[in-house]
Image 1 (cartoon, rainbow, N blue to C red):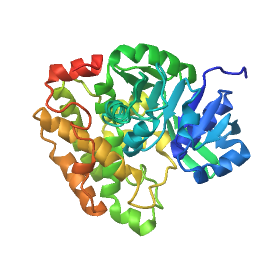
Image 2: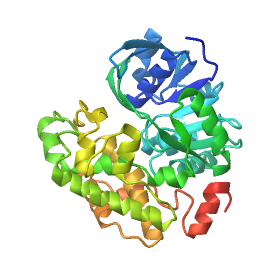
Image 3: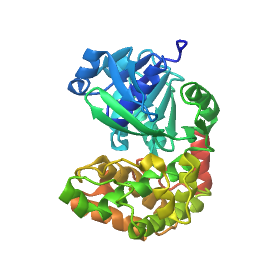
Image 4: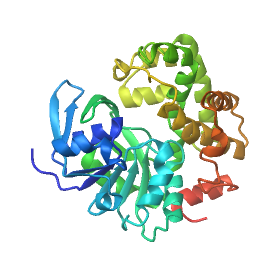
Length: 367
């Protein structure tokens, strides 16, 4: 395979970060992997890369250009920065990166969840950033993947198509053109409101965990999360959550796709209802449930997905009783207050904006 020239830094060495770094490196992209705790990437550094099992069962080795816990070193030469972290870490990462990011450097949140690019831009400002990078968010993560060991990862499925948008929207086309050099599956979304409100992790992740709490704790996750955890009853709850999300989108002038539409677009999975469509998705087969409740599907997706969707709905006159219930249950189980810790409209920089002012802000970056 011919050498690639796009210099890519992957920030985060969890399930997704290791899979993405290894997959890109296996295609000869010069990849730097950053993780704030070096002990978590020491084995990768020693081996010089990551063993990857691809979705077609091949075993490949992704040789990395650099493995580091120095954020300045990680960002120094990167043209494309792939942030593959729980969304709950975006704010702190933005502040830490602020002194080192460069003009026109493309930063893609994989994914942004809800309001990711808006929050990251606020974090860069709070960190004293004086340059003008292009902050983007993906609607979801490109892979269904898992970490299989300290220097091993597996990709179960790759999505067929994936929207991304920049903040402000005026930078989207140039950013996506660069991102497509690495992943042609990406295409330009209308703006970050579309990627944020089409956040399917908000529907599929936290509520499935909350509705299966007893099973998770009793078996330590020894069941298939999507195949076994999605029953006809839990699927009906997910459908209700989905309707509330779509209604919030409508209130701000967005036609958000339904969960069934998303499953068809991302995986070609079809069904008469959400239960059938989820069970028709081969990419979900074999994925075990989380083995604990203190998991990113709760501490990431509740404050960074459900909370901002509900609070955006509240600002624009939409009630979200089922979403509110899930946040309340998560607060009880985790012993915290995600309404306070989560992405509020103030933290996203959009508090009090009218619908037209909101669209102007995301499209131009100016209030």
